[in-house]
Image 1 (tube, one colour):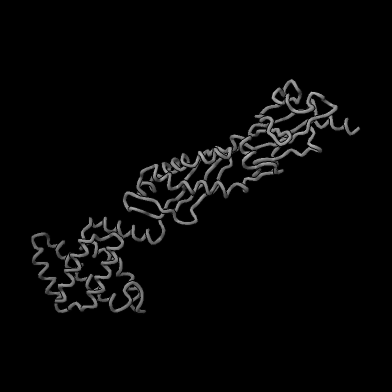
Image 2 (cartoon, helix red, strand yellow):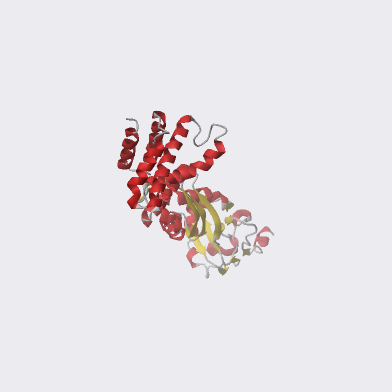
Amino acid sequence: MDLIKKQFIDILEWTESGEGTLAWRYPMAGNEIQYGGSLTVRESQLAVFVNEGQIADVFGPGLYKLTTQTLPVRTYLKNWDKLFRSPFKSDVYFFSTRQQIDRRWGTTQPVTIRDKDFGAVRLRAFGNYAYAISDAKLFHTTISGTRDRYMVEDLDGQLRGLVLQHISDAVAASGVPFLDLAANQVEFAQQLREATAAEFAKLGLVLVSVTVQNLSLPEDLQKTLDQKIGMGIVGGDMGKFMQYQTAQAIPKFADNSGGGSGVVGDAKGLGAGVALGQVMAQQLSQGLQGPGAAGTAAGTAAATAAPVGIKPDEVMATIEKLADLKSKGILTDDEFAAKKAELLNKLV
């Protein structure tokens, strides 16, 4: 009776109940597959027969009758030709070939890359990607193995790491500076997909798409970039840039003037603010009166500033601020040296 009952177990199929399953082993008592049974492989699926530890064949979508006539590849399987007397034993694994979409990737730490404009920058990025099983045999032998069920979450960490390790390769391949790259995320995503696709293929997967949702710099570098942009707004003119910096500092100074802390804070900062205010007044006067009146404006500014006087600690505070701008790449060495000499002359 047991032998007869086995002959009615004749349909092998997987309805993919539940989400997130990549591979599933069909449960069979004794792993015995009966002669004359049928195998149903639906669209978005592949089926793999494993006999005595070795993959026998891979089935694409369709309905298959399990007979010696329809399975010529398996003629070498032991006892197949004995039909009912000794059914062959085999494992059957089903694989989902649907796209696994909206898998997230992102940099946990900034990635250092070379850049045409900034020399070297630390880049942050995040987005998502989609993939699918393309080679069930390779995926079975390298990833899922003999497990009853292999889930999408089991693979996420490995795939995310593969995407992240190729960010530098993608930037180098694009040859696009960071500022242009951030404005053209589609091109960067394409370069990232091409750089990573080969690693996915080694696992039996195809990397269908990669999207980049954001590219950014760490906070400290972003502040430097903002200052460089501010310098660009005033056309690289040092006097105008000092006016710009002072204008940015005035509201913060007003907010903190009562507490003695903040942007200016101590006496040195206050002295630097006074010095920068004098420079701004001088430059503003020149701009309003025109090039012909530059000498007169300078004399007037000097006469106005003379009674106030610049203390040594004020000059030193201003030089320190200029040195900070030079270290961030906003001022060149020549610009810093010229302004330093000008301030030191005021101490004579």
